[in-house]
Image 1: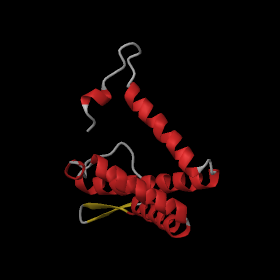
Image 2: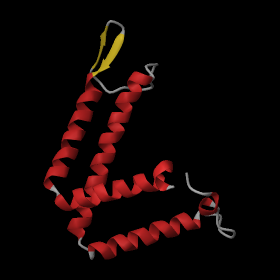
Image 3: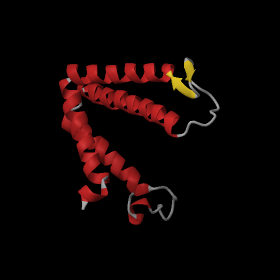
Image 4: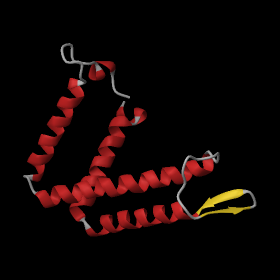
Length: 132
């Protein structure tokens, strides 16, 4: 997704220095915008973490139906109905994670504003049709 010049390794150290520099700059900008308010940074971080976990659980649940083959390990509480495996345990985990994410959105104003802004910004940057 990123251009080659951006991913090109450093000539001396072999690291992706441009990506590292951008991450450092974004972290410094975040600290300056928040004025070092640890509570606000914690709420914004919690927003990202809880939604990340909820989306990952949803993706695992969807993959269980799209690729129903054997698995190395499974979440307990799987029932078989007419040859179809129903992952009740995985569904319950996904529901709990989404419930926590929704509670986070409804109770943390700063986290919601910063999280939604960050999501929209990343969507614009990484969606090929929107970024052009």
